Length: 106
Length: 530
Image (cartoon, rainbow over all chains, first blue to last red; front, side, top):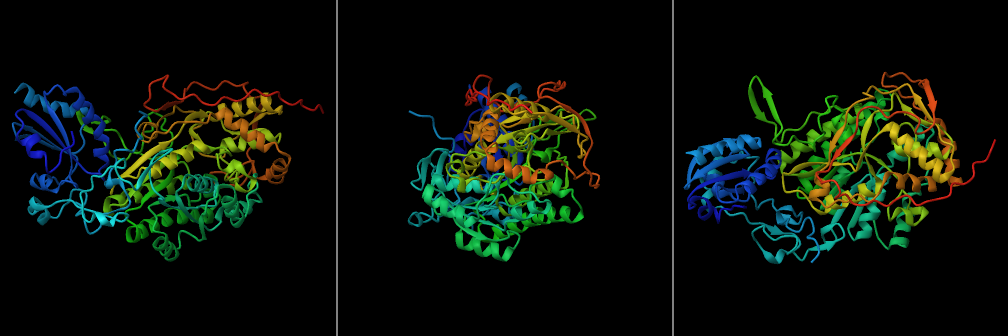
């Protein structure tokens, strides 16, 4: 799902459960390449196991400023609104999915 | 309800009419100013619209489907009367695209300094299809299509003149066709090589600086070439510019995603090197200044037809078939039409990506209509088929013999180039069909057939006859000037095509491909004996 400064609190911080946010920028070629992979995971986990959202950092300066997103892509994994894990740079699908183990098994 | 147009959901963020400068505080590729981060709580992204000033400042969330300035067109939503500037308007592609865009209702302007007309004269060659002076071309466009195209004779590397014209025309998209597009031309000698790189690399760099200053919101639709990638002997797929995220570098038991990194380039001539240099310059300009660009890795182009150029002899686009500017299918077809054995270099198992003129023009309109976001640099592989050179010679030969009663032979020459002439080949071209709605319409055989219809007309044959000395390659990559030896002469279809099967990955499931127009059955004319 597309996230914004307006819906971030409701969709991610108030969400009870694990959520992954993909912070990206138009100019970021790695983000472009990661998009289909993250979308595939979104489909795979759409039954609610993990909520997955995208946030364009240029359109949403408030949230990306708050989380000090300086490099993209940055992926932050939340659980019950708390940051569990944070990764910078492109990740292969299986690497990204590897992060989920923390919240799914934990 | 019909299918949704491919760019319906794009927003102001993609629109060149959105005034971003002074409104949006771009985070320079993530390196936001520290104070911006601290004060980010009360920040809101608002823009103004050049076309709808009455909206004042607003959030850039209006979609193309919602905005009255964007209207439905044949190739997606398009900005009404979108101002498109074509650099290199007088060329093979520039002229064909100008007519297509103007005919679709775009506001088209173009520049050219007639380099191509001049340099083909260096080796006493010329376009085998007659091309009219620009004034007559423009008059014919007005008369036949009812369109006004604004043209200026101008060298695009003259930054002062270019800047002044950009200020006047205020382009919303710039198509860059003003490079010297020939590998052999860049290998003739030091002067030619340096001129190709000056015109191409420095010209493009100057263009980028001028766009930054005058029209940073315009999209740059820049012509690169599939040749930038080379043909890796490992058979690694030729991705669209960047590695996908699932491509992983493995070293000493550790793994990193290569996602988004530019794939290696392996340019096979100094011309191709110029295109690779452009790629880096455009990529960086997008990163530093929020310019936006599609870098098009175009396959080798062929054909003489588009809906517009075929309407009137004065609207025809040029067709070069000499060793320097003649691309392979065009050259083979002219050779077949004039009883010259088709010139295959080396083993002839070089495999390349190809696209017909009409299909390439469709891709261009779609790309222009659907601009990238600010800062976005994206690469598309503009290819609709992959073939071995020998296979092309066979196809031209078969169509020539069966449909036109020609007597076609193939000659294999010692390869004047330094290149692998036997290698695996897999090209990826997923974006144009899946993200921009491109559908291939032209089959190789059908276009060759149509080309032969035109090239066997007497007046064209005469023009081929006059320049045929310039067809056999004399430019050796070694720097020497000599005609290569003929290894063998054979009939089309006689030779084995080799072990590697070329592959084109369009991301589409087999069976979903569009049906192409077949070659109509014809009775070949009798071949005259003796």
